[in-house]
Image (cartoon, rainbow, N blue to C red):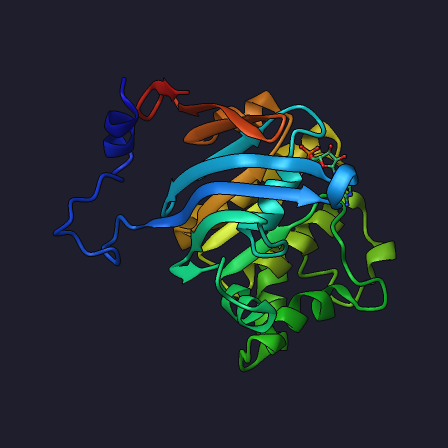
Length: 258
Ligand SMILES: Nc1ncnc2c1ncn2[C@@H]1O[C@H](COP(=O)(O)OP(=O)(O)O)[C@@H](O)[C@H]1O
Ligand SMILES: [Mg+2]
């Protein structure tokens, strides 16, 4: 199947008459993304030209061997890191052109990131960890909202606990509540089950998908877990900084690009 046909199955072929703001406008539009670290002879090419278009609301699993560039790609797509080359539009914002402050503003409330190591602030309670991004986004009643978000992930009884007093699964749930509380349209999760036992991991995955279904957000998950990948509508594999395969799930529209 041609790339164009696959794209049209995903609702992505836009004729010139269609508004770029129409409902099917992609939420991520990346072309030729490159990322190098270091300079001169020490420069290491980490991303070597990534083309990726993600339609709004899609669930996408990002697979690939360790060191293939998955976390780096997520950092670029979520605006945490700036690409060295290429074009990138995320949630309607031209990430390649925004300066640091504008990028931070563009991310705020629109993009939620769940990192593998949770990255909760150890001196803040679960409630404060979730309320902080809401306060930054100017949400009224941030603490009330944060309590509701924590209750939604089953942690209503852990509001005043510090991260060190929580299990790994509970910390990951706080991290998810924190990422989702501002109702972002785009959610990134980097190996969200990597530090959890199988049962807790399955609960975390169910939670991510349930909250995504409620919000209609786009979900991009880095994982080594084939079963988790199969729950996603699309599986993209990276190898050595490039996209090696791009597959739509069989239960949706089945085909492979590249
Ligand atoms: N800060 C850094 N300095 C130098 N090399 C890095 C840095 N971060 C990542 N890399 C290298 O970039 C490559 C991709 O890393 P990463 O995106 O973390 O891969 P993955 O998430 O797929 O395991 C690896 O070869 C890694 O060693
Ligand atoms: Mg990684």
